[in-house]
Image (cartoon, rainbow, N blue to C red; front, side, top):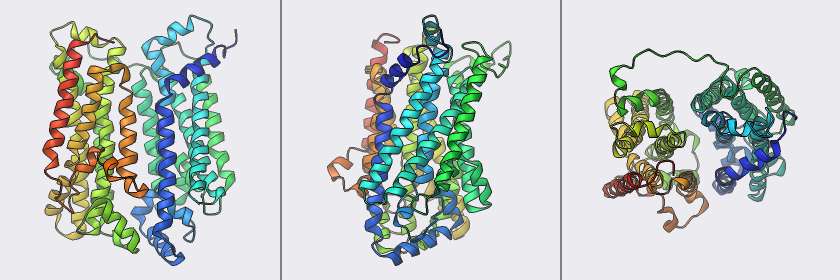
Length: 529
């Protein structure tokens, strides 16, 4: 029997399991890119306006670090994909990281690969199937993205270059995830390692674009930008992530040969012989399991807030265009352009914070499927108490990163304006006002967990819909009745406008009702149903 025996069957199984998540994520990225490109063409109808915008962007180091550089100030396509090239590559990388870990390390951790391995399945078949899914997903992303940009009216060569950059960046991080899956025993740690590498790669790209350029060449995200879509494409750069992924795949195979099924190459550290007082209840256990992730989210949001606060006071320098100014005002505020910028950026931060809140509930379902919930419920811990702890984690845990972002933005903006105290107060409120909408999405996850646990994956469909409709609806001309389906649409556009404050209690009530429905359903249904 070959070490690849059974790869085809496992590949088809993986495609079936990903029949919703991967297509929706891929289509959302492609549609968003095409819509943003079409909208940009309307913003800069003259060459002069386009050149002024591009040169102003390149003159702001913080903005270049955040989004990247426009390599050709005369290219409409280069301006259209400014916010998409690096950030989109990171999103595709995250998708493929989670895909590879899900079909390798997570399967080993759950014990399902033990059952498969007892049949006619080769040693390397699961890894090969996961990587095949990664390749197919990357190709689909590249083709759909390039096609969407071309349909939007951008040059075909640049469209293909952007799609190739996203595709190959995803392959590179899929290979990184494959190596991480061989190193550690838990899927969470493998995802954390690969995600940490992704964060480091984005940081190297940011420093390199705004400082010593050679640092960008150390990052797969930087490679995606160095292909330079719509700015004199450099096709040879595509070979870098492909070669990088190929080398790491060989490393992953060799590492797989040197370990037992279910084991990792990193040595497990023995814990203390006796648990501390903090682990005598579910609260302490939840904190112990989630503290590293929460601290990482908080640190990232603090840095994000500092960057946003530093950019806002100079926002007018790179939006010297009446149409662009009107668009930003329509998206986020009514008084000042800087306030509209804050409202827009914190709205995006709120949606990302919802990922943390929803993950708290999906993680509990994963614990239930791994049969770790039953031992807890066999003690004095009730179902209500167990789920309530995760709800506290979802609600309070999502508030902490947003609080850090508000404090960071207020501090950075206050240093420039000379009124630090007032800026911290108003921007912290701007960040925290996102919480009712975040809690509504967490409530959707809770209700599905309690009532329809087999359909819990639909929460990510809801999230994608909120991102596309809520954040890009204005750009795409979506009717207001559709925009109102997003809970973020009903939030006030602080700090520019207080209109919509009366919607906050209603959003909190909706979230509470969804939480209650989830708790009631969990109390009545079978475990691991």
